[in-house]
Structures are given as structure tokens and as C-alpha cells.
Length: 260
Image (cartoon, rainbow, N blue to C red):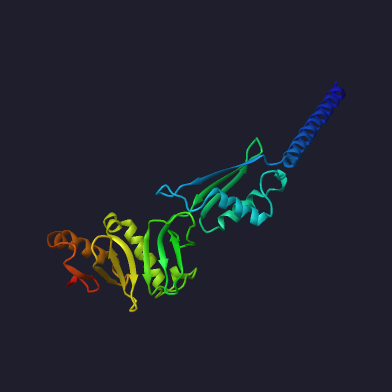
């Protein structure tokens, strides 16, 4: 009886191992066949900017991939398509924040793209123009769309990837001021341009009216913004937008204005 039970147990194990081996062979065969299958199509999904616009097109994205890999996606064996590398290549492009690449059950390659959101357009002292996004990453200008964002001009140095931690860098000051403006609905609707003078003074140019708002530097920026908002609410509403040529907030606890 014991010998029969032992024999049955051994037979059961052999059958179990054989089943596992057979399933593994089937899975490997299916995977290899899947890799040998060719991509039948490409579907691109690009998330629009908050404005509903696009800085990059589907054609741009396919061109980036073809330039990096040396061939089109459609018709290529799926096993030859490196999805992780494809994502890295796309995320290195100026306008792309993130990319997700995958293949569905019908051998269709999907590319889901999230665009970088520009927050300010820089025109530096050397005549170079570009955007910065909310992380401070440099973005080239788009051939398809001009983003409606703050414009910064004047004595702004050339872009340096480490500008945000560089002391005394005017680009850093512009970036910090831009972030503060976009946090405040009043300022976002008021300011159209940031200007850096040759004395390294930050100035804001309103969308309405043509006065200059002089901040100096970004020190005590919240206090300066508070004084500016108070002045506009209390004084400008009574005297009109064009009474003053400059509104100076450099001096502590003061708003010094120069009339036209």
C-alpha cells in the first residue's frame, strides 16, 4: 500500500512538472510570436495645454522617433521596438514633459504625451528667445503656436541650467517673480511684461496703462506685492491708470510715485 502511494505521488509530481513545462513552452512561444509580429499602427494622444493649444504635433513626435531610431514605427517587429528608450527619447524633447509608450493586443503602438507648460517667454540680452516652464526647464519656441504668457526682457543673462541656484542671477529673479505673479489672480491679470534694467532692477509693465512698477530685487517680495495691491485698490481707482509714470516699491513701507 505504501509503495503504491509513493508511486502515485511520484507520478503526480511528474505530471505537475510536465504541465508546468508545457505551459512555460506555450508562454515563451506566444511571447516570441508576439515579438515577431509587426506594429500595425500608431495612436498618439497629446494632452493640450491649459489654453487648449499644442506646442507640438503628432508629425513632430513621429519625426523625433524616426530620427532617433532610423525607421518608422509601423511595420517594425514589436520585439525591435524598445518602448523604454522611446519614452526617454521623447522626454528629452523640448516640449514634452512625459511620455508613455505601450503596445495593445492588436499590435498598435500607443504614445501618450504630456506637454510642458510654458510660464514665461525670455528675450535675453544676447537676443536669444525661449520659454521657461514651471520647473525652470528651457523650452524652444514652437513653430505651431505662440504661448500667451508673460514676456521678460532686458539685462537677462544667457540660460544656464543651474540658474535657479545661482546668486545674483537676473534670470533667477525673473523666474521667482513670474512664479509669484502666477500665484496671484490680481497680478496675473495686471502684469504683461517683466523688464530687468541695466541697474539689475526688476520692473513690471501692466497690461493696462503704460507705467512702470519698480520692484528693485526679489527681497521682501510678498510685502512689495501687498503694497502694490493696496495702492491700486485705494489710489489708482480714484486717480486713474495713467496719472503716474512710475510706481516705486523699492523702499520699505513706502510707495513712491512719479507723476507724468
